[in-house]
Amino acid sequence: MVFDLYGNDDCLELNNFYKKLLAEMPDLLFQFVIDSDNNYTFPLVSKSADEIFELSAADFKNDIKYIIYDRILPQDRDHFFQSLVAARKEIKPWEIEFRATLPKKGIRWFKISSKTESSANGNVIFYGHVSDITELKDKEEKLRISEERFQFALDASTVGIWDWDMVTNRVFYSSLSLKILELESTDVFDDPERWDKIVHPDDLPKYYSDIHEHFDNKIPFYENYHRVMTSSGNYKWILDRGKVIKRDENGKPLRVIGTHTDVSAQKEKELELIKTMKLYSDQNSRLLNFSHIVSHNLNTQAGNIKSILDFIDADVNKQTVAEMLEHLRTVSNDLNETISNLTQIVKTQSNINIAVVPLKLCEYVEKTISTIKGYDKQRNVTIINNVPKYLTINFNPAYMESVLLNFTTNAIKYAHPDRDPVITFDFAIEPEGFKSLKITDNGLGIDLKVYGDLLFGMYKTFHKHEEARGIGLYITRNQIEAMKGTVEVESEVGVGTSFKIVFNDM
Image 1 (tube, rainbow, N blue to C red):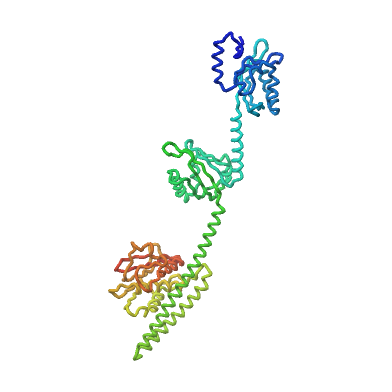
Image 2 (image 1 turned 45 degrees about the vertical axis):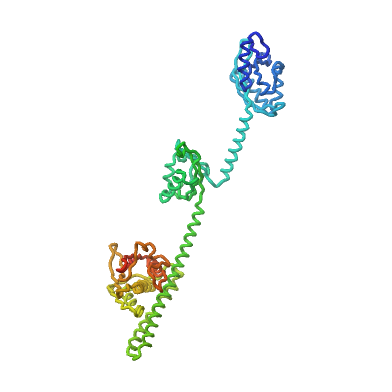
């Protein structure tokens, strides 16, 4: 029996059931027969034919072949009928996607899916459905265009893309990411742990810190500069940015995407700039040293000369003139030597390598003692020199003068008001074999718990004094370190202070 939804009354009840059922089907359902004479008939066509293909049931009773042929887009006709002939000949399922131009809707995409059977009389019967897939095709086309645009953007960009699936612990790297890392596609890391192994060890703590800060939702994304080892074994600087785009119900990251940017050239320029700035800083430090030496050394000598002259003027009986004149000659000779040393410094300011010569440390301590005579005529200063006479130190002469004068005059300047200043110079050999000089006073002392970190800072003062400038200790440390030495301090408030210079002249 032929089941016809539109004209057969012999099975009315069954027909009504199928009419209701098929009315809910959005697709066009059909039974399609091709006889041995190549005639087309449609024993069954659902009512959705009118909605989907804009054809009535009556149209299917006519020679439908030509109606369908005319509606199929010319570009798709050959493919359509070739697939139909193949399915008929081989008695295989018929599936095809094609475009058709409808009177009202215009061009639409359709998909036919059907099974094929052959009958004893040589007819071939198709059972299937037709779906309107226009919206799906539009989405596919938009997606294709979007992917092409994205791929073009990737190819044109200087930024590599990565995508980390934290559920599977797999990472995708774009072609540019691989290029930046100098890797082949076969070398792609299969998990983040392998990536962590190529990050420079010095950069790992900050790298982990930035990532976890973002994972903990403290910052909207992370950004980190670090070095990675390429396949060539060299390190390359990259800017790594990342953002969590998917979390579970507890906020745990599930997926992270990010970028790699090669910033090696930028970092090289930054390092060059740092080197240049350090050079300028060193030059400024040397100039500052020189300025301090000039003001401190020469002012001390000039003050001594003035004090001697004032003493001579005040001596009515002129009994000590000869003694003072002798002392004046000593000061004058020291002043000439100081000027000579300063001239040497001037010559070396344009050179990174400051002149270093063997110096008898005991003699320079004695010179300092001689220089500070009259520095503070209000105080009875005792200076004890325990430095061996044979001892030599490789140092710059002007720097040595400046360092010893600064420590000595500071000890006098910040003497305890209840006692006369006592300054002791002691020599020692450190456990490492380095020579050291300790300068100890019984002055006011410094609270190292409060000022320890600031002690050698520029413009830092720790006692009220009209002559305090807060630059002496800064300059002194600078001079010692310029000679590759170090300076240490011990102090107790109300007891005194010890400065220890460790000379690196081995």
